[in-house]
Image (cartoon, rainbow, N blue to C red; front, side, top):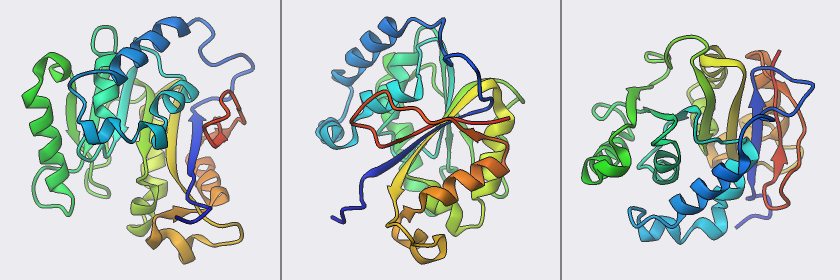
Length: 237
């Protein structure tokens, strides 16, 4: 694996605040909920085995996830993060999976796997909502200002390949509440590489992600609250 293969993690918020983003939230309850979710018997063993590489707890804590949030996950695939997010948000919050439609698209098979996963364990997934999200035709993520957080993991290069990255960020900005958070993880391109040189490989330049998010209305707020999650922060106007 390339030495540049470390995840590139951003926290982008719909407003740069002069105070901590979630000062009133109970971080203790979030820690407990995440710990319980990560140990859940509903998780696929192969997915749980990758926690040591993907660091889901540290990543979601870094983004500021709280159990009472409305969270939209863009293109969840077969549900690697859904296994963690759904139980955390089950009782107090709402998880919305903005997925590729289950038929007629290149990765529709993953959406069907996600649907099968949720149908097989309704105690965990019965409150999860699934909506179609297939840029450029299906870009709506819901009512304006209705979500606390939008998350996406290793998808930015796919949207860039379809010339839809800016449109996706704009849709995320539109659905977020004042002060809402966009959390993004992708692979970091080698320094000096342009987006045209690397996006087909699944890698993305840091500056390009930031500049595109800023065009959508976000502003970057640097933040380092864990040594195991690369990069940082948050933004918007």
